[in-house]
Amino acid sequence: MNNGVVSRGAEKTLGIIGIIFNLLTIALLAIGILSFDNVQNTAEFQDFEQEVLNDSTFASPEDAQLFLDTFISSFSIIGWVLVAVLAISTVLAILAIANLRNNRNPKAAGVLFIIAGLFAGLLSLTSILFYIAAIMCFVRKGTRRDDYQAPRDDFGSQNGDAKLKEEQRIREEERIRQEERLREEEQRRQNDNSLHKDDDTYRPL
Image 1 (cartoon, rainbow, N blue to C red):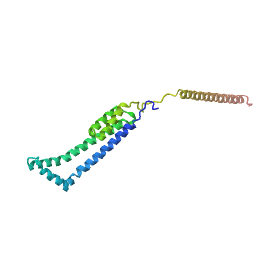
Image 2: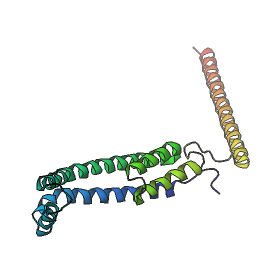
Image 3: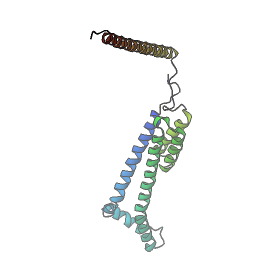
Image 4: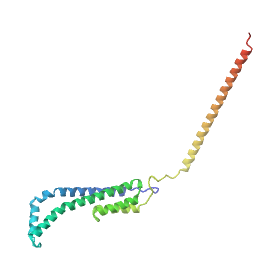
C-alpha cells in the first residue's frame, strides 16, 4: 500500500539509460570528428575521392572537386552540431530527473523528457526511452513525499495525551511537596527564633 505516494524509480531509470546512450553517441561522434583527418589519408578514402572525380553525373571535374571540398568541410561542422544537440538533450534529461526527486514536479519532468527526446533524434532509441519516461510522468499521479503525512493513529494519540497528563500531574505533585517543605522549614525557623527570644528574656542577670 503506497498511500498515494508514487515511486518514480522507473522514470528515473529510463532517463538515466537515455543519458548513457547520449553520452556514448557524443563520445563516438567526437572520436569520429577528431580522427577524420587521419581517415582522409587512408587508401580507402583516396579511392572514394577518385570515384567521385570520375563520376559522370558531374558536369565537370571542377564540380566533383567542389562536392568533395564541401563534403569534407561540412562533415566536422555537422558532427559538432550533432554533439551540441545531444549535449542539450542530456542536460534536459538531467533536469527532468532532478524534478522527479521526491516527486517534486513530475509534469515539468515529463515536458523536459519530451524536449530531450526531440533533441535526441525524434525516433531514435534514446528518444523513445525519454518519451516513455514522459508518458509515465503524466499518467502516474500521486502525492509528493514531502507533502505526505501518515494517517493519524488515534490510539497512539490517546496514549500520548494520557502520558502528558500523567507527567503534568507528577510535576504538580512535586511542586506542592516542595512548597510544603519550604513552609515547614520557614515554620521551624520562626519557632527557633521565638525560643531564642524567650531565652534572652528570662536569662537571669
